[in-house]
Image 1 (cartoon, one colour):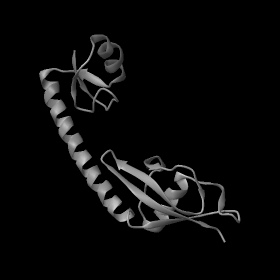
Image 2: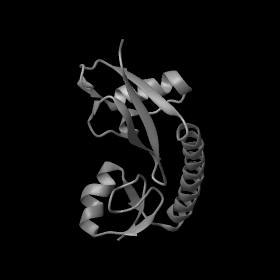
Image 3: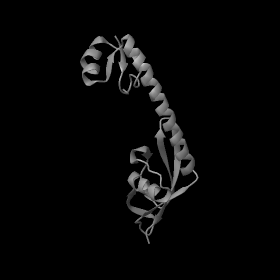
Image 4: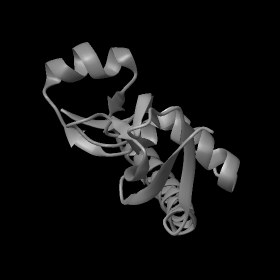
Length: 148
């Protein structure tokens, strides 16, 4: 059965895509949850408009992510944390700490789930990967310094 997706579904497609699925899957899952509608002639035209709007949103989001990346890549973000005499932190630097530091130092708002932080537990420079868009990933240099 041909259906038009009304939302992005992993493994199936994105909003506005026309996909072929089993009748039971469409009848028992996609239609009741509002994830899809049957592919009629009028609905296919609507799907084209949905895809066009999705592509425009995607393009503007990619441009915004690229602009943020070009601003953050050359900068070094400083994060203060409590540390022992040997340079080990009491705890660790989290993605929420980095998001707060980026906001304070550059006025750029990120979400903590956009950052990939792997256990920063020592003083010094570390690299954190930020993924703001499916096509835009970039490194952020984080300098962890001890609180005086």
